[in-house]
Image (cartoon, rainbow, N blue to C red; front, side):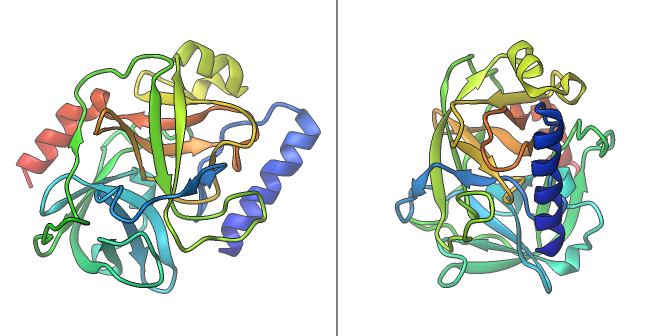
Length: 257
């Protein structure tokens, strides 16, 4: 937690000094929902919490099938499978749900940590998930989401910079923007490539300090995986791995493992 707070403080200083912040990925806890509201129980049954021994909640993810969870590569780098558990079936980080152990972590071979390109990964579970009314898989999209589409972000965590960390899942509707506009508005165009989809509504709404790897959903399909953003909805775009761009990698990786 201290490492994540340090990164957030550094970004705030950078914003004040330069007025145009660079897009920065999370160090430990990043990209949580700001300006949203508490999600209704069972409204995002595909949402999971990736939890690491000693740290607890580390990242979000999406259930693709009984054995597979979609997340970000940077949530998996440096983590051993035996350290990771997946919490499903609850909106609360404090109670309820079921836990499943991971037995294999896979991420894109061309994942680029300085710029966080190809920031997509998969978790294979040791035992199959038992589906129910509050635990369901979600399809991943093979189609490019339109510009200015209303999309849904869910995640746990801080609702403002330096604010408290809610234990209940948060949700917010955002809008997509073109990659060209994303590059112009981000202040660091090199971080945005064809494998990204960006969202931006207004200052005070978006991602902040936690839940990288979590799902961005459009028409009941996951279309993005939380990658990067200026923490805490400062009026700059948030970036997600564009799932349609990586659908072949997802399908092939699951089939071969």
